[in-house]
Image (tube, rainbow, N blue to C red; front, side, top):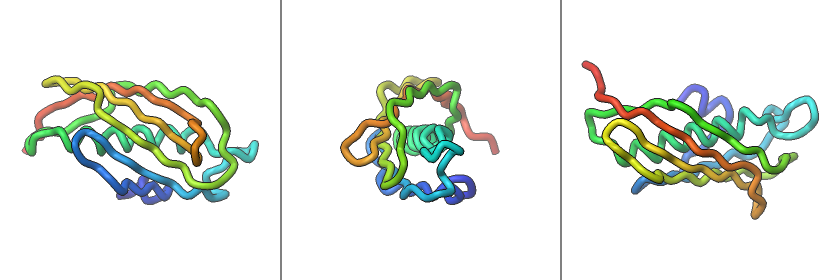
Length: 122
């Protein structure tokens, strides 16, 4: 789990090309301005996208991020962050995904990602 555990990211649901994850915000997540660091939100989306895509991969396939664009909409000072992700399209070698990060009912970030799909090596 490594980095995921370090930031307290809990992926509590993953099935059918979708995932849901959460982080309870702590002082360790803050930037010098007292709001959650953008890297935390980015990591939620990136990891959530991988989790969602893995539910659509064959047993001999893996994936990696090609690019991820994130729009930061509002700052977060506390509470719980929830990230909902879905696969928008999966081809043989490339997949497109979308994540929304919320703090309560408020949308705080949205991301679109492109992932490579490739065979696992022995």
